[in-house]
Length: 423
View 1 (cartoon, rainbow, N blue to C red):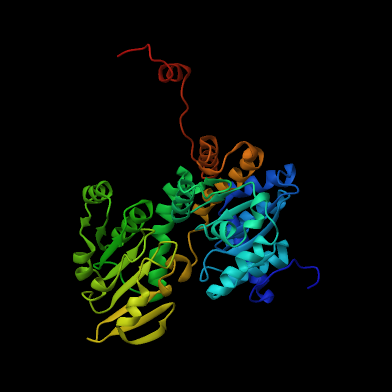
View 2: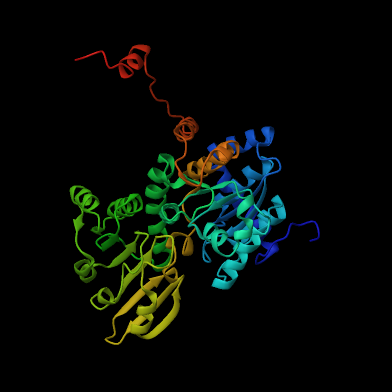
């Protein structure tokens, strides 16, 4: 015990099972594994401290391994109270020497205590998943700001918050919007969120999607993924949107587009993926069908107005199934809330498949390496991942899948780079 790093986790005895699951994920993360092997030789993070607020999953564990083998001192806390895999946390501490502060189901006070414990390392760089760690740095832990040189954010919600901080002149260091790079949001957000969200709802409720009406709130990349997977399972998909362009896109994809006031009356399953609050609220609960399923795939538990739902319920039956709470309204209708309205794919399942997180975390690892070399040249603000990193990740991923693509001929390159050649 004395040889282990400082930590606050649920049960160290779970480490053996956690190690097996981390190794299983590693099999499906060839891009990150290649990066880790190079980092182990080159040690680009020697002497650098990272504080990471992320979902403590097997995939995240392999990112922590890559940073650690690259010479970094990494301190990890959870970005969601329900997403922590306690066996993964145990293995990171016991097998890889990573200080972890995360317990599944921790309350709000414990959640922020863990963020502060990770920040106690006085980080040079930060990894965030939802901007809670960065927010804490800029509010409760401002004394640490002078040592922070930059960081990465991997969620849509977090990037929105960071851009607002930049507009307000509040952000004190450069942050890289890893979420916005193509090999992240085109795959992680769409294919990962789509599959894992439906996986979670099926684990929790064992519902049959075929023939059901699934209402998807939001038609960004996550909403597209959820819609595609639901339609693939035979569901009738209804999309609600506030953006006219995205609503038009959904319509031209053959989906029904309705305002939520109308969709609430016909939906069997509701999945929110907007990044905004109160997407499902009183006027919607009042008209929903008996047995309607409510799930949120947005980062924070604000998209479903749970306080109002609780105030409307004559009775609440907790955990009638895995991560499923039943709210019985005064008229006898039952509404089923999955994973307490928190991020459903991690609250009621295992999150995205490792194969898709391979690209997202490869982006994170390579961006961290790049940022360590250029952070002193960047003013506070939000920056995109360099295009060459994005393309490198895509190329290596294709190679790992045995897929080849064409290359431009010299004549084609000349044609594309010239304005003098006409039709």
